Image (cartoon, rainbow, N blue to C red; front, top):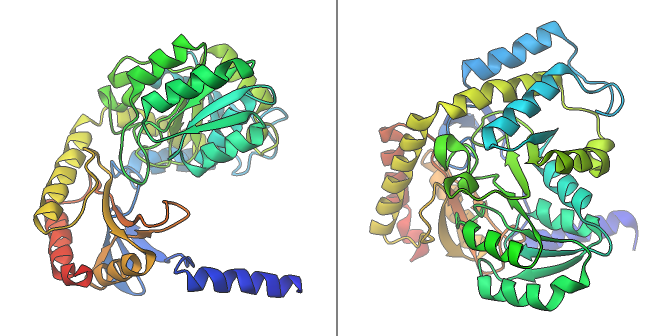
Amino acid sequence: MSFDAHVREALAQLQTAGLLRVPRELTHVRGPEAVIDGRPVTLFCSNDYLGLAAHPRIRDAAARALAESAYGSGASRHISGTTDLHTRAEAALADFVGMPAAVLFATGYAANVGAVQALVGPGDVIFSDELNHASLIDGCRLSRARVHVYPHRNLGALEHLLHVHRSSGRAALVLPDAVVSMDGARAPRVELRARSERFGAGLGVDEAHAIGVLGPHGRGLCAALGVRPDLLIGMLGKAFGAAGAFAAGPAATAALVQNRARSFVFSTAPPQSQAAAALAAVELVRDGDALREQLQRHAETLREGLLALGYRVAPHASHILPVLVGEPEPTMRLSAALLERGIFVHGIRPPTVPAGTSRLRLTPMASHTALHVQQALAAFASVRTLLA
């Protein structure tokens, strides 16, 4: 078989399974509103939870950095790519999450892959939640540590794995998502910290979908319960409305990440404009309690409304609302029907979620109005018969 035939066959298999993805092209994006194929739509599938992506202070900060410096950084951080804006952003992010130090990455994927791979390696052991994000899974693989996967949030299973396998590794890392991106479930942080300490393991927490939204002044779920992880990953492209991510922890942890994370060492530094946007976003998030309250009100209204309409919504009190369907084809049919009614809620299919659990991932934004929310519920009401 030729290589071209191999590629075409793989695409055909995805098509047959209902798993072929074709990105939607959005134009005229203004907060929760955009245009798709010439038609106005309201976004209910964005991770811009606080609606900050279009905030003038973030845009102005990035614009000033562009006006005063080059766009591209020109080199990695260890060569000539580190500027005062990078180090100021790292200091502000570390202070925000109450950690001694932070390391700025160009993307969230790079942060998770790089930080995990930097801190554990061959001869070490990782205990990873089965629903962790792909970037954490790939970080585990890249580390070449032995990986033991425990059932989602199952503390008994984790404790058993720690008891059996902890001694086989020089160092150990327990690795959960604070909030699972596809169903909104929260990791039991206090219990995970206790078990990590009991077995002499580190605790690394990905706060991607919690940072900015949950905890005191948006500092995340660990801060909400006074849990201090050994590694905290925060994303800037979600509630912060900016771009990139950071890994925070003790100074020694940050130094090791800077020296061993392949996605940091061998990558051109993020543009200075990205670091400037992150600096502005930190202040907006810190002062964003009213936005967080608005987001939670929208989430509660949507959850109650969807349940009243007879939809299956995952039972987690979160700003992420998974509307469970089951198979890929009806999931995407429902998504298309909602889009026809001006509501963009994307279908989530394997391999992002396990087979048989395809869903619509509905995410409100603080910048939605009450009318937006009611229009979404009306659209869901009008397409309910598609699932009969």
